[in-house]
Length: 217
Image 1 (spheres, helix red, strand yellow):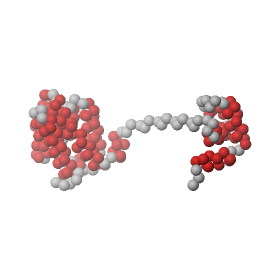
Image 2 (image 1 turned 180 degrees about the vertical axis):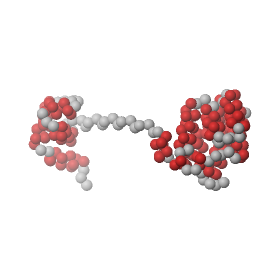
Image 3 (image 1 turned 60 degrees about the vertical axis):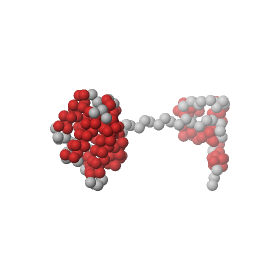
Image 4 (image 1 turned 30 degrees about the horizontal axis):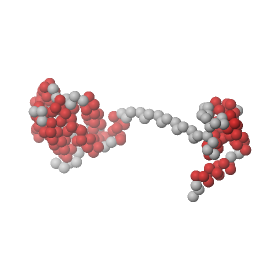
């Protein structure tokens, strides 16, 4: 196996006399290993093309006579869009994240929801959950008093409802049992019982995903 030092020595031996002359001119013009000008400017000063210049610079770097070039700044990655996230995730990941964060949302809602927030949740329940769970869960996220919570919930549901994530997102959880589970969450929020609200939310989501994602119920 060739060592790094041997590889450097081999490159030095392979350098043509013309490249060595250009390297010497660079050293003569910039003897203190200071910052070199941009390649374009240096090539113009020496009257050579940039390909030849780069060979001379690499020779000097191999000899430890000039510092290695600074790495270029990496361009920022474009922000992921919901459509991009759909292709990167799967139903299990969405379910996992919802079950992690929504019990916390319910707990915060029990501490921070205004009377009008609670009235809106109760009104939605009184409508029999005709719109499914989404409206109730959205109202709970909004009532946390945390703007990011509401936005994160909306993003997760947009991803989940994409047809590519399967049938779970399209399930209409409007059965009497589903509505009663959501009522337990709202009742706990209205009673200012954070732990109870969190537990009720966990029970609701676990039941929903067991039936619609895992097919266990």
